[in-house]
Image (cartoon, rainbow, N blue to C red; front, side, top):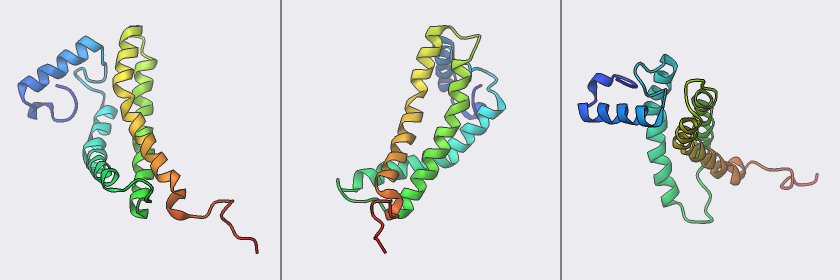
Length: 143
């Protein structure tokens, strides 16, 4: 039983998660998972996953060179900041663990790094359009 409401997961999935956590040494996916990690999983399922779907769709539909809508840029900033922040305790748990081997730390951290890379890329997408067209120092007109 890992994560949220693990009794609802099919037995084969629970076995796969148990194998993964044992084989790679993912101490957060072992039973019982820490309460704070369950809270992060809840926020991922209610906020991060739905926005991820919206973001991928918007990115694929926007032509190269076009700006993203302001509402999307705002949500990218919120998503990127929130998701990146949730990765700090997760990665810290692995990197500072005294129960994991160096190999387990490296592999498990590598598995989780894309969950930091994508939000940082989303933040970049929002920032590259000057945060919704707000003037930058070079765009200001002299008075």
